[in-house]
Length: 105
Image 1: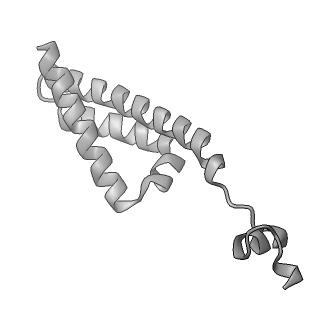
Image 2 (image 1 turned 180 degrees about the vertical axis):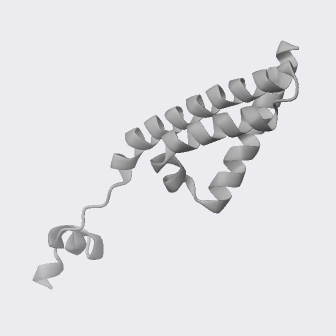
């Protein structure tokens, strides 16, 4: 029973994330992660509330969704500054002409 609950929860979270990211995109999903966690947990629990296994699957799916979105948010906060682009005029000249010699041409 425990294996079934975790397998069904993983499938539910995967399907939910695929659906959400196709509609909203990762940035908006991570920006609204808290409200998505709450809505997903309540919705999955209510949708599967026919048996005890269904309720357990909904609750575990909510916990997995929270973990996945928290981890994705942490990765985004760590990786995003590495790809931030400096848009100052000097940086534009550097991008256009390596070595910063654009003003000497």
